[in-house]
Amino acid sequence: MNETIMKRDDSALNSRRIVVKVGSSVLTASDELGVNRRVLGRIASQVAKLREEGRQVVVVSSGAIAAGVKRLGFKEIPRAVPERQAAAAVGQPILMEAYGRAFRQKGIETAQVLLIHSDLDERGRFLNACNTFEALISKGVLPIVNENDTVSIEEIRFGDNDTLAAQTAQMVQAGLVIILSDVAGFFDEDPRKSKTARLIPRVEGLSKKIASLAGTSQNPLAHGGMRTKMLAVSTLNKVGISTLIVKGRDPNVIERVVMGEPLGTLFVPNGARLKGKKGWIGTTAKPRGWLMLDSGAVNAMLKRGKSLLPSGVVSIGGNFGFGDVVEIQDAQGVAFGRGLANYSSEDAARIAGKQTREIASILGSKDYDEIIHRNNFVLIGE
Image 1 (tube, rainbow, N blue to C red):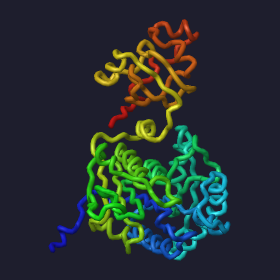
Image 2 (cartoon, rainbow, N blue to C red; image 1 turned 135 degrees about the horizontal axis):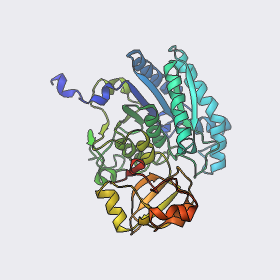
Image 3 (spheres, one colour; image 1 turned 180 degrees about the horizontal axis):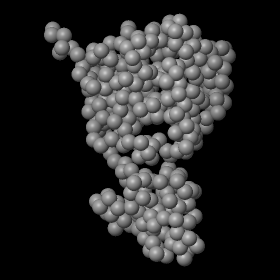
Image 4 (tube, helix red, strand yellow; image 1 turned 30 degrees about the vertical axis):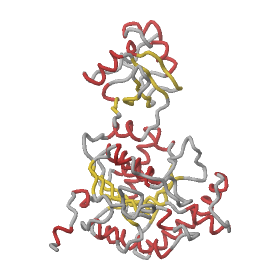
């Protein structure tokens, strides 16, 4: 067969900056406990070759809980949050020691970066994290990123390292995310249940129909399987970053896919790309409250590109301050956007439904005409 036919042609494969996400199911199979150092070593070799080609790589890795479980002598993966956090606390240094040893053999220094969602939820801290990544990469250091499971709780956690990989890719402005999984890609049916399941080699955009095919993982170390991967792909699609899902234990899989071998599933973004601050508003920051608008204000924002004035606000929920991200809802309570609030929830409630000229007399001063400026508004769609 003609060699060119076997190649996948996509500009993302030539990306200078790549995020490689290593799943627990890759480092630790379902019948194993602890980190498989042989597998980790093979991943390190492939990442080292990417760097030799002039690529810049950031690794997002699971595996801390798996490493801790083995060291603590658990018979099985604990379900209780405190026990999982204890396993993560024990396992983090074990995991990093394993990565450090594997990459030092390739002449590469590593750095541990532990994050929770609240680190990125405030714009200033988000930018500080971006600057840290840039400093490490500029010094030739390989960042190894993980969620800080030891202290994270539901309100501040990413929930899974697929989501963390998507957020990391935005911070470092990567062109491609390679997700090393325990499955060979995205299928039209669950390959564990159907012998006729077909691999989908390429997906452009991410329709609801495609996303609905995603299932959950049966690995007790994983956090949702293909479903969480689709959420990550959706986030990456919005900011214009491609995603490859491949079987992580396949021989030299990273090298092969960046050379164009059509393994796994390539998700290619389409549509308008959210950049910079709008990307952060639309995909990273968690809304601290919501604003419900009347039909006139909805029409003005959606069809005429206008800012949100107090007169269009019907009701307010949550507890937010100046500069926080809030969800924008229509009169039926359906969210259609997010934006940065120019007023706190308390002040916004006082001026809701009022004219701009009335703000100063109600609040004692007027810093802004708009509750949300159009430059700080992001549409959230399908």
